[in-house]
Each structure stands twice: as structure tokens, then as C-alpha cells.
Image (cartoon, rainbow over all chains, first blue to last red; front, side, top):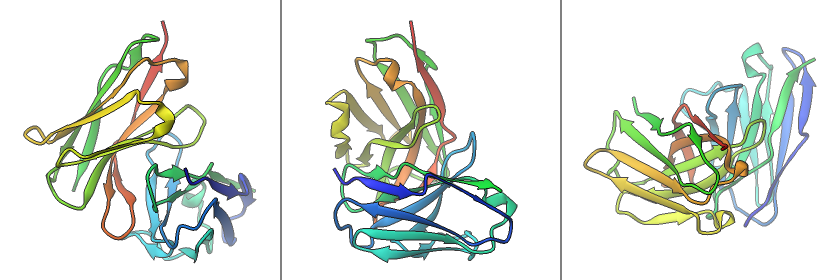
Length: 107
Length: 121
């Protein structure tokens, strides 16, 4: 199985900040990576697929980059509705695997 | 707008079989380019992909579940189902049904609201 490691596990930030979350795959996955946002008590929501493609309807302050084993999710100009937990998921092969999550908290 | 809704018992006894059904509305489960997945999340923990099925019946399971999983599809009812046998307390989780797009990179673009299943005697 491909292991996905996210860092940090949590980050404190203020509205207007720029936040960067990192995801590392245990082996190369080309650009086959997705990012999700999850709020408490809700299902995850797809933000980005294929490492850098913004899902329809997702604000442009979210962006993704990377390929191979190292990927980043950047939230520019953090908004109050962005405080949530974020997960990466490798989309290269079964079994699909997720990172452990990064919680973006209010500073 | 596609919608997915999980249904099934919220309480299952240890060693028994957990059974859930996902009803898809607003779209056909027989559409190509999609897998229909089950994903779970233990309370306070991360996400685990359980497995998925294509409308033709091809299935893909997570080996970590040691052969306890079976996923089936009923295209006439636009539903797919999960069976997880020999459950223990470790199987207590919110179970989500979901649609996984398979064209050019797998990703889950639609999720059900999730249902909490507790394993307890």
C-alpha cells in the first residue's frame, strides 16, 4: 500500500493568513493526488484533484502543487469558513489511501 | 444534483455482520467512469477506504480488512451495498458511501452524509 504522510498535524492561523499543508507519498504517484476539506459532523468535500486542478465551485484561494512524492495544498487569504481538517488522498492505485489529516485552527 | 444516502442498522453486535445500503438519486449508478465506494472514519480519526464497485460488478477491496468485505450493486434499484463480517469494536465508525470518478485520476466527488455504526453488545 502507498502510505501518505501529512504535515503538520495541526496549524494555528488567523483570517487573512497564507497556510501551506504538505503531503508526502511513500512512493511516486505522478500527479494522482486529491485534497479534501472536512468540517465537524460533515462529509469531506473535494477541493483539488490531479494535484493542482481546482474542483468546480471551489474558491481560487485554494491551490495545489507537486508531483512524484511531494505535494502541497496552499490556502491564500484564509477565510473563517476555511477552519477545518484537510486530507490528501493518493489516486494512483488501489487500495486508495488518505493522509492522517491537518487541522487548521483559529489562532 | 447527485445525492447519496446511507441506510442500515446503527448498532451491530460483535462477531455479527454489518450491512449498509446506499441509494443514489439524481443520476444513474450505471453511468460509466465511476466507482461506487465505501469509506469509513472512526470517531475522532482519519479516513479509510473500504472498497468500491463498478456498475458492471467489478469490485476492489482494501486488503487491510482481511477478506471481511463484500460490496454489491443493484442497478435496477440504483443502489449499492456493503457487508462487513465478524465485526469488532474497532469497526465502529461513520460509514460514508461515495462516488469515485475514475477518468484521469481517481477522486471522490460526491459523498453521502454518513451514518454512525456502533459495534457493541
